[in-house]
Image (tube, rainbow, N blue to C red):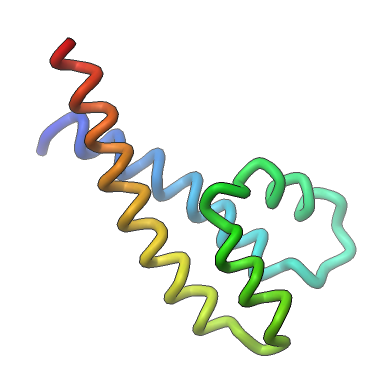
Length: 86
């Protein structure tokens, strides 16, 4: 397997996964959740809007975050691949 592809997958999975978990626990009283949401704003802003508007939106959040993960993975792979060629 291509090293850039694997690295971009792992980074994307961790970053988007962390944001998804924060979105799923948005109603908790933990201080960590808002901090994680602020760190992962680029990949959670659509999911945050869904979570804010709908009270029971787990499926919609997971579907949205899966699409965001695929887009983020593709973009990160291109960035890593382009960085190696220069």
